[in-house]
Length: 261
Image (cartoon, rainbow, N blue to C red; front, top):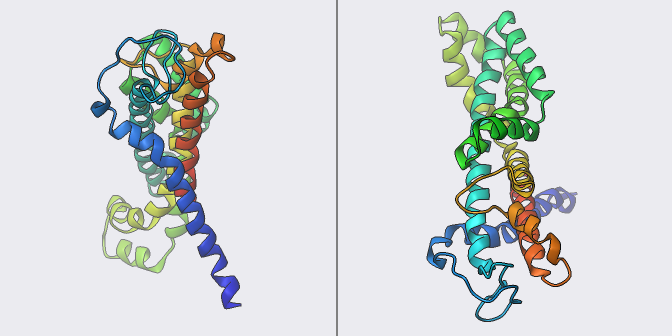
C-alpha cells in the first residue's frame, strides 16, 4: 500500500523532468540569442556542420541564429498572452462569483460570446485590421483565451463563497471585493495557475500558425515563418523544417508537462 501511494508522486517527478529536458533547448536558445550575434549571409542551403550546427536556409542565414531569434518571439508572445489571459480571466471570474447575479450574467454571457470566436481567428482579424507585432499579437491571443481562466476562477470562487470564514468576514463588514482579494484569490490562485501550460502552448502554436501563413510582421521571423519557407526544400534541406518543428514541439510539450506535474 505504501509503495503504491508513492507511484503518483514518482510519476509526477518523472513527467516534470521530461518537461525540463524538453523545454531546455528552446529556452536556452531564447536566452542566449543575443550572444549568437546578428544574421549573416553565407552559403545557401548548407547542411549542418561545425560552422553551421543547424545548417543555413535558402538565403544563407545561419539556422541556429535564426531559430534563436524566433525562440525569443515565441516565448515573448506565449508569456504575454498567458499573463493577459490569466489576469483578465481571474479578475472577471472573481467579479462573476462575488459581484451579484447581474454581474455574473454579464461576465458569463461575454465569455460565451468570446468562446464562439477562437483565439486564433480573433488574432487573425486583429492582425489584419490593426497590423501585426509582438505586443499586438500577444494581446489578441490573451484576450481571446481569457474565458478559460475566467470560468475556472468563477467556479473556484463559487465553491469557496459559502465557507464559514468568508461568511464571518462578511458579517464583520468586510466588502465583497475585500473578501475576493484577501481570502479567495490566494486560495484559487494555484487552480488558475494550473492553466499556464495550456494557455502558453496554445498561444505559441497560434503564433506559429499566424507566422506560417504570413500574417505576422515581427522584426525577426518566427518558427512558423521558417517552416513555411522550408516548403520547396523538404527533400533537399530537411533541417529547415525539422529543427523549427522540433523546437515548437519541445517548447509546447515541455511547458504543458511542467504545468501538469
